[in-house]
Length: 337
Image 1 (cartoon, one colour):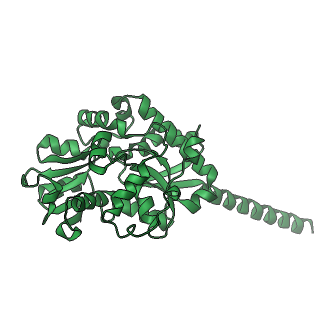
Image 2: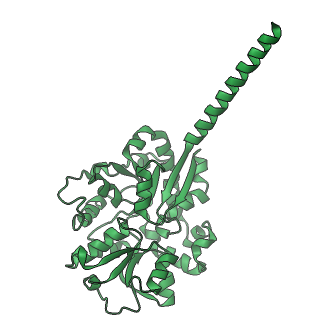
Image 3: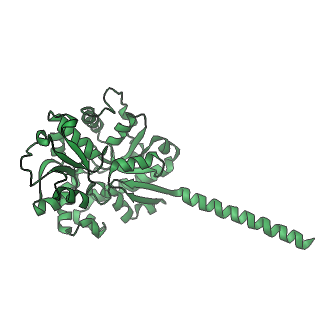
């Protein structure tokens, strides 16, 4: 009888321990937050990798996994499918998605300028303005991406129809460079450090520059909030504690960017991000560092500028009532410690 009881207690204890172990494993898995970055080697999305390198996620008790996806539109789709909890990408997706009936909010606004440049191949000196895009193939990271949005805006604003030019998804970095070298695209929109590389080799020249606030306002008509951490409104509502911790980590990262030199920031980044030219990487960051917000707060006039740009060409927002107050939140950055 005693042996039977002992056996019963042993089995029961084993079951309890197994259940506890499974619960702990499940809890640990639930603690992981996956964030997809629309190309984390791009300087415009530098805060994502920098926050990881500085240990700010761990400092907040977060288990954050950064995943790399060259095109922001693909990162967006991964989030909508539930494969990731957040995206580091352009704020304009929050407006575009609301036009499709999906509610997504920018939680931390990284930048107030796109940090993008429209480059023209040196083989095509006939392209002197966006009006000359007619009949050309133009490089973008992906169809439906922010680079595609901005390219379409430039063309339509210059009097062209969307059918007058072709957007070609070529990604960024080496794939963009190869497309330009092979004349698969005659011009294209990209970011640092790709810009500096192509200017240094003489294979391209700048047509439109949106790396600075002044250049952005001249082209787009106002402050243009771009790189951000955005998430589904429903996830934010159900995970306020985690969202606050993410905001804490990113606001601290933005403060680091605002108070340290480009060289000090570059030293924290993976060496392969330099693309073999650390000096050029640092110089590009030095010139573009001012695009980052110091505190993650959405610029007050920014959302209206983005909506005005998208309204020029996008059927997703044309004729729709867009509630801009539901495309971003400042709650978490203002409470950030």
